[in-house]
Image (spheres, helix red, strand yellow):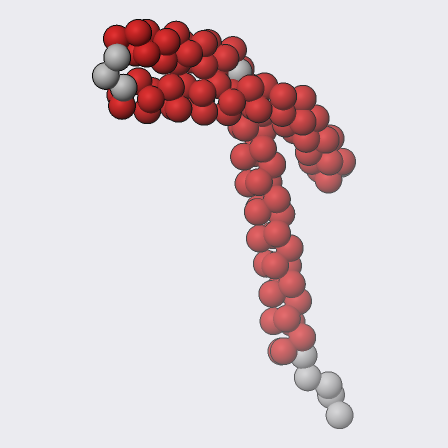
Length: 109
């Protein structure tokens, strides 16, 4: 029963991570636009270009803010990673347990 519930949890986490993939792309694009416009804003000396880069930066920031709810997908992916890591650790512990018994076993000949 525990393995079945873990399987259902993994399916739910995968679907949540994939459902938020579009929002994550929008978040990354918005942050990229904001970063690029901030760098250009700091380099320019013209008042007009500073206004233009500030407007572009605000547009990028609004795109990034609209993608913030997709961070739930990142949390789901991180949880999947830790579940997989724990699963691999438990599997290796079981393998080590069998090795100890195999090394201590001696036939009665």
